[in-house]
Length: 84
Image 1 (tube, helix red, strand yellow):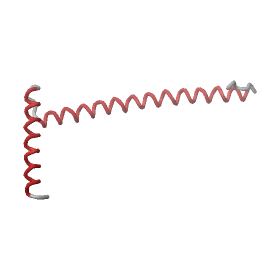
Image 2 (cartoon, one colour):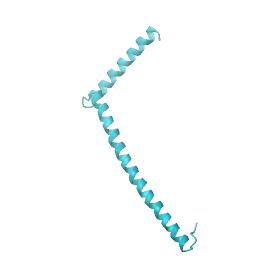
Image 3 (cartoon, helix red, strand yellow):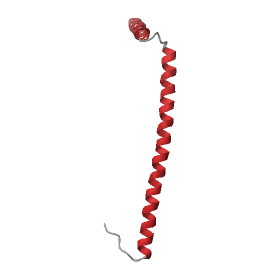
Image 4 (tube, helix red, strand yellow):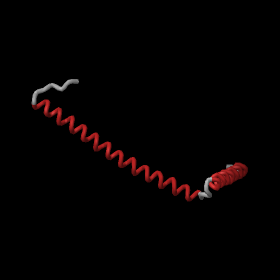
């Protein structure tokens, strides 16, 4: 990377940091670290909720499948054909 490119990249980073600081300052004077912590906590919280929902859905599916298996076994035992 040339010296000119490095200088332009540094200017861009400085400008970007200034814009981020201004936007965060206009929205309650929040620091970048506070925003990062908020987002990480939010992602963790929703991830836990999704994991819990997945477990519940898996359990419901397992119950439905085992119920179908029971009906299938009963039909075979009684020699009753299952309709398609």
